[in-house]
Structure formats: structure tokens, C-alpha cells
Length: 391
Image (tube, rainbow, N blue to C red; front, side, top):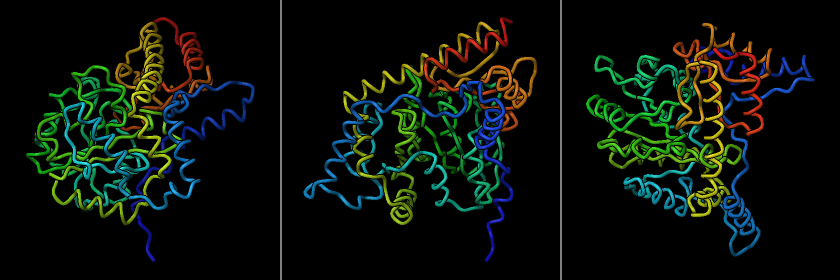
């Protein structure tokens, strides 16, 4: 028996586990102090009524012999896949129902999709980057190269023809920086991937936060993307499914074998998302669901505005927040990102995410999320402004 020694190349602690450890230690030593968490991107508003009613109705079906369902299709029920297909059609993206695969979330699929690719492929990721992109490839032993995302390019790097990569990760709106690619910006990446015979893994988990329709929600709004891109999305941030777990991946048939390979992989290694959850996800696309979900999304957008206004008054430079739930701020007084984390935790008990955890270009930056409650967001920003002051 031999172990996968690639695991020894991972950092000892996952970023958010490290944060949780620090917060728990502080809380144990200071039980009387209220900690406000604006770090991990977990939602706080409950599921909307349309979704809850659909889940309840589906649960009732499961208790009646005539409507009970056992094993479902591993790739998802057609009712949900058709709802997704219609949603994309509104964005002038035509999908075949067999190109849509339902899963338990984008994070799972972003890791599992690597089953389809040889370990000799070279992976290109922007820095800073969502840690899962990096860690899942380290686990497989692939070579990873980085492209700089920084202040100079507004954290939206363009492809470099001198770099040869086989698998390319793009997240827009971006986690952690909140930056959003324009159609022209994504077109450059599509052209680069096509010319390099590379595949783009496009993470669209935050597309619902885009309100400017000049900006692309899907990479398939870019000509040629169907020939070089796989898209991942999730109901977690769109509709509050972080505790319910449902997402989807689009693998175009124009990618050749990859569509059938992913179907084979899912039908072998995945049991499918529960019927009850898929009925809830279907309700996300209903007229009532869409209206209610927009109310929730506007709530988080307003939270982002509160954070952005506070940072502006304090004279702190930041990115994101406009079309994203993430605000990516520059640490004041040239503090390191972990020092700033400790500074906020010890002085005002506000928790964010140190930028260093997302890569070397994240050093000196700090991520806040707008997913907190309104009360906590306002209170956190009052504490922040008192501590930092007007610059």
C-alpha cells in the first residue's frame, strides 16, 4: 500500500480552517466579546418562500406511494435541467439539455472535473485565487503556473502568449477580488485557449450579482467559448443553498469526448442530488422565486455598499463590491494581511479573510464579504471606522 504523496505538498491547514482556529482561540479567551464574521462567504438570509414551498411539496410527494421516487438520474432530473436551459436562453446562450449536469455544488465539480484530464497537463491560475483550484491540482500532482492579478491590471489579468498552459481557471465575478471581466476581456482568454488547444474551467458562481448586462454572466456569451470552456455554477450564493447543496456544470458537446466522459464519470462516482433539493432549485427559476431571490441579492448588494462607503470615508483603496459580494481592500499602513486580521480581531472583533491565503499577490490585501446580516454589517463598519478613522 502506498499513499498519495502529493498531499504532503499541500499547506498544513486549509485557509478557512486556520481562520476558524484563530477565532475559536480568541473567543475562548474573550467569551464576553461579540465577534462579527465577515470572512467566509456563507449566506445568512433564509431560503425564499418559493423554494421552501417547492421542497415541502416534494417531501410530501416522497411520502405517497404513487409519487415516491427512488434513485434518480445521476446527471439530474430533466425538469431542473430545462429550467437552467431556459435561463441561459434569456442570455442568448443555447444549450442542449444533455450538456447540463446537476451536482451538489460548484466546489465539488471543480475538483471532480480533474478526473477527465491527464496529470501531465499544466494548469494556469491567476494569483490571487480561490484555494480549491490550486489544492485539487496539487493533490493530483499537476504542474501549476501562475499569472499575476494585481492593482496594475485591476486584478483582471490578460493571457500571455509566452505561457503555455493546458487547463485555465477563470472566476468572474472573481473570488476573492470581486473583479468582473468584460466581454472583450473574456474574448482574449477564449481566443488564447482555442489557439493553445487548452480548456477553460469557468467558475460563474457569483454571476447573479451582475446587474450591468454589458458584462457577461456566462462564458458562453463569448463567441467560440463552446469550443474551449466548461462552466460551473451554484445555487449557494444565488439562492442561499449553502446548507442545501445544489449546483450545475455545463460541458458542451462541441468539446468532443469530454461531454460523454463527464457523463460516465458522474454515473459511476456520483449518486445524484436528492429529488427534493432539485425541486427547490427548480423553484429558483420560477417567477415568484426570481422575484424573492432578487430581494435577497439586493440585501447583500446593499451590505456591500455599506462596506464600500465606510472604506471610502476611511480613505482605504478597495476593489469589488459593485457586482460581487466580495470587497477586496488594501490593508492600511502597509500591514501584512495576517497582521491586519489579528489587528481587527483583537481590537474590534471583526473577522475577514487575509489576502495572503489566496496567493502571494494577495499579501497586503484583505477580503470582506457582504453576506452578513444588516445589523452585523452596520455594527462591523461602525467599529471599523472608529478604529481606522478618517484618513
